[in-house]
Structure formats: C-alpha cells, structure tokens
Image 1 (cartoon, one colour):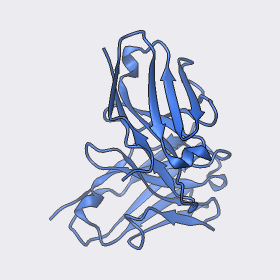
Image 2: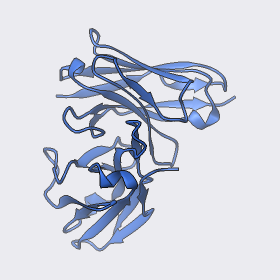
Image 3: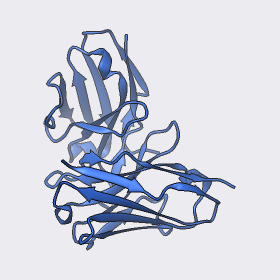
Amino acid sequence: QVQLVESGGGLVKPGGSLRLSCAASGFTFSDYYMSWIRQAPGKGLEWVSYISSSSSYTNYADSVKGRFTISRDNAKNSLYLQMNSLRAEDTAVYYCAREAVDIVATFDYWGQGTLVTVSS
Amino acid sequence: SSELTQDPAVSVALGQTVRITCQGDSLRSYYASWYQQKPGQAPVLVIYGKNNRPSGIPDRFSGSSSGNTASLTITGAQAEDEADYYCNSRDSSGNHLRVFGGGTKLTVL
C-alpha cells in the first residue's frame, strides 16, 4: 500500500534552516509529481511546492519562493524540502503528498505530517 | 489570500443533504478536488475530476461544477462526516501553481 512518511521537523530559531524528508513506498515513486503542503496551527491548507517526476520542473508558492528548495532522489524513493531563512509564519505541519498521475493538482495520498516550529 | 473561496462553516441535520461550495476563476477551466480532514489527521481525497470517488469513499459524496463554482454534496450526512472540507485546483495565473480554498467546517447536528 502507498505510504508517505515525513521526518525532519522540529524547533528552529528565526533565520535558521531545516531539511524535511519524505520516504515513499508502495508505488513507483519516479512516475509521480510530488508536493509539500503545510498547515499552520488552527489554519487551512497551503500548497508550498511541487517537483515533477524527473525533477525537471519545480514550482513554489510566493510565500516561500527564494527560501525553500524542493528536491527528490528517485533511487532512494525520497522527497526533500530544504527550508532556509525560516520565519515564525512558517510554523506549520508539513505534509508530503503524491499528485495523481493523470489529474493535475489532485493529491491522492498524503503523509501524516511533520511539525515545524519557528520560535526563539 | 486564497484564490478559491469557501464558506467558513456549514451545518446539516443528521441524514439530510448538504452542499459545500468553492468559488474561483480557475474553476472555469479546471476541476476542483475535495479533501476531508478530521482533527489531528491528514487530509483524505474524497472527490476529484468531474465527479470521481477514490476507492473506499462512500457514494453519498458527490461533486459537480458550474461556471466558477464547484460543489461537494453529501447526501444523507452521517455523524462521521463532521470534518473540515477543502477544495483545491490549479491557480488562474497560468503559472501552474496549486491552490486550496480556505476550508469549510461541517457540523452534523
């Protein structure tokens, strides 16, 4: 069965960096676009970034552009999010999600999320 | 601010029908997908495309679209349907971004 397991969250000071990972299993990882989606405490979902199946294309929400970098390693079935210059408003649960192969912008599987807290 | 607009809260009596709506310019060109999220859990896809349900989603959930508005309908709402519901689609700028609506809190009375 499809599994997505995020890791790497934690407490970081403003201006600091953190790298999130997402381990995928149960499907051919290299066939799918993948995204990071976040949810601030008590708030709604916010799409953060996606990467194409072969890493040819990436895209970012304006709120993180220039600070966050998405990447993947298809040999390791892993997705990453490098987060730099972190701000208090980046505090959220970060989910990795698989984008359905034939339906753009539809997220058919989600991980359980990892919490990132940006605070001094 | 979100490019997709949802009512913050909706309520329905047990066993009745409820419609949750999502408005946005991009919905004139792209279908919305719908997600259910219960407290402390990850979102779950419930409707995608024209009106498709993933395996395991009850057939009381259905989707429709007209103009710039997408709708999620729950026919015969159950207590376990109480949750937050989010729509999402592509953005309207042509930049291939993804966007979510602000979410609707559904209360089953």
